Figure 1 (spheres, one colour):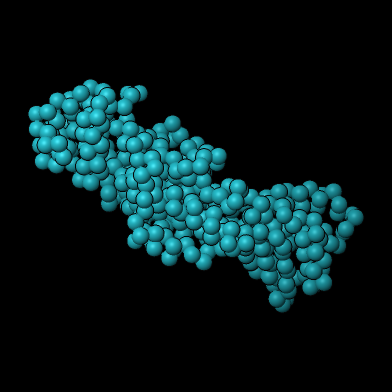
Figure 2 (cartoon, rainbow, N blue to C red):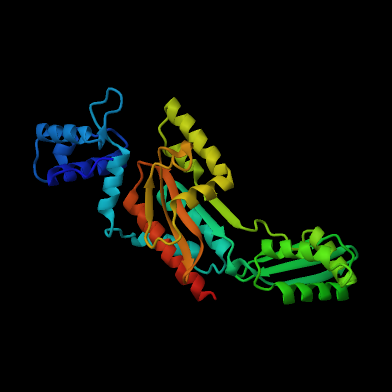
Length: 349
């Protein structure tokens, strides 16, 4: 892995090449840089520096083009120089606040965050809400709606309310007993743990609470205690941005199709964020080249952070996009939303 460019002139020219390429998408030539050089450097001088940068592994020359494009190492160097300089525009702050203000539960926040990240970054917004104490059971409520119908309501610690109508004929008195048993025994348990323990008790304690456990078993079998996703809710938005912003060569199209297939598989998205986002990290992390976790993501970038309420990690949020991404803009948005997550969800408690 190359070290950073040796001198100030090399660093300045490399930064200019990265920023010019991000803005234009076209290979950058020495004449283009000479026109915007603050030091009034000649095209010949810049050409010599670019040759040195190419030898050092920071630039490559696509096909027969006269210009150069940054390598992954150039992007990594560029991102390191951005640390501490990241600011979010007032316009984007307003968009984020309008989207997220008033949200009181983790899953809704994550769903809206994936949308607003894709909007601001013009790439893919990805969020994962993990099960934890705030997504544990607060209480259940069962109500008889009439012949053959029971309303089951499950409320979690984070305020998520899930209800479903079941085709069951159980007297209200038995429903009340079942709800009381579940609330007394399982408040604070995650849904998966609760269901595993209930299944065990249904086998062992049937004779002791025969009628009660029979009611609970029927409710359980009909999905009264099911949630849409016990452990992790995954939200991916903006995949179409990759299609509109990508190069149209055959190789690029194939790579893009692989990447889109990857994003359709939720467990792969969870694996991707888990591989690169450390729950202990404090700052936004930028990873250029994601092929260690998934080979299909070799030419993509992840910019992400854990989402916390107080000290508790509730999930993670990230942008996934091509290496030609507005890093400063996207890093600032991810950082801002991660701070807002803590603030808004702490206020809602």
